[in-house]
Figure 1 (cartoon, one colour):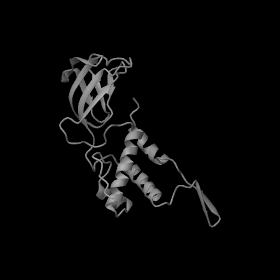
Figure 2: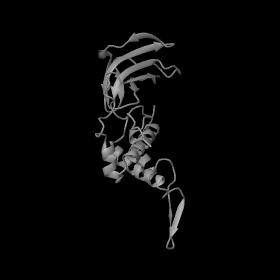
Figure 3: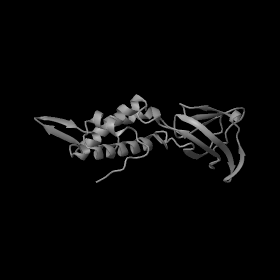
Figure 4: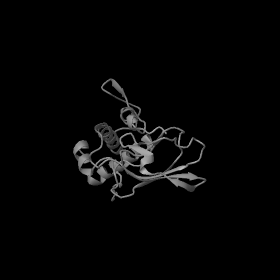
Amino acid sequence: MAITLTTDPIMTVDDVRALTEESDVTRAAFLINAVSAQFLRYTRRIRITDSGASVGLVEYLSGLGDSYLWLHATPIISVTSIEMLSAGTVTSTLATTDYEIYADRGSLYRNGALWPGPDGERDVKVTYRAGWVVGALPGDIVAAAVQQMRWERMRLDGKVGAESVSRGGESVSLETGQILKSVRDAWSHWRILA
């Protein structure tokens, strides 16, 4: 069975093979795909790594009525355009002097004005590039990903799934959730709340 590696991997196949002692390339790709998807879902991000495309992402957002607008991918590499919308129609395009980019935080600060308030409409369209270089993600993301991949390997091998195991008179309770608590704790710093 051939498994195609995601275009947005949390780690490289070589790194996974070295850090999880997984010798099979297909299983390494499976682990990368599974954990990359878990990271995106849990953190509410739309991208992990920079795709390298000149225009990578388009987001339609609702402002919160304050000076900051939060994007769903970091670090921000560049912003191509920011358009203000009304009922889905472009009403204006902001000049680069109208906003500041806070790349690592994933936010845009609007100079001298507020982003629209939360009226239920997605009234800001941002076209931008964002994401880490593959192989250069922050250490806590990678360490937690490795831990989750090891857990996923044990699931594939049928070694986990029960809630407790006893051997030699001792009993151990096992965690059976989708993402390990320690992984959620590590990734919670990278979660986008808005």
